[in-house]
Length: 289
Ligand code: HH2
Image (cartoon, rainbow, N blue to C red; front, side):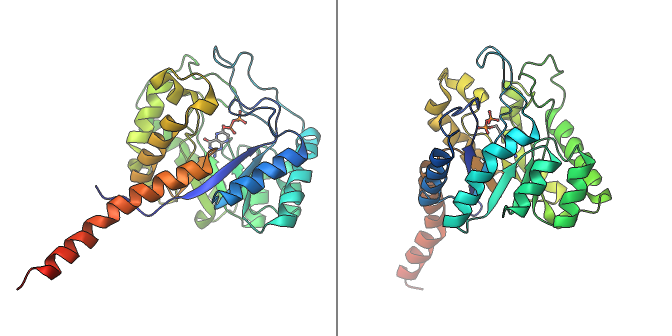
């Protein structure tokens, strides 16, 4: 197996009361800052701060998350952003769909934008072009809609590829540079279980879009469905399997909740992969010509 170099690990910090994965655990600024510093200690390469959950409605998650106004989102976000910034120079991504939030966060020292709507708001696209910062463009089939969402199964990889192409074209038309863009298939986000598995398996086909790929599979319900492990925080083994497939498929970034475990898992996997050529060389050197 040819395993690529280790992807960068983006540690998730949800400053929300209602995230599917860890809602309410880090709503207070001090606990969110402490969590961010812990993820840095575990080896995160960058952080993703989000202050509005996108938890879908559905049987596992009840009513789904509540959309929040920009003012409330900023009140949650900014104290954590400045608190982390004071103590670390780690790159910070902001997970938001709102231009006002993105603008204030960039002014306060954020480095990247992570827009799960794929720059649907032209104001955000314009801001991204002027800021010239890295931007994650994510595909979705409805941001708050449940995974079932009565959508056709269809050829999912082709749908995601053309959706990302369209988002990329919109961003370029707004003045962004291709080199700024990171593309994300948007696992979950209106796609039911098997579609996500197929996207992970065929991730390499999205590399043709010519931008680095980010994958956010960590703790998601399609992984829980595989093994029947219901609580999101108990989905680490399944999340590591997804991290392995994303890595083999060429992902440059993994968005994960369990940074330390993912880092150790990938280090072991890569060490096993790399020992092949090393062992072969050592063996050849011992054989007399
Ligand atoms: N997934 C979530 C949120 N933001 N951003 C990108 N680029 N890709 C993803 O897959 C992605 C994302 C959902 O995970 P989480 O933040 O843990 O949950 P919630 O939206 O409920 O806060």
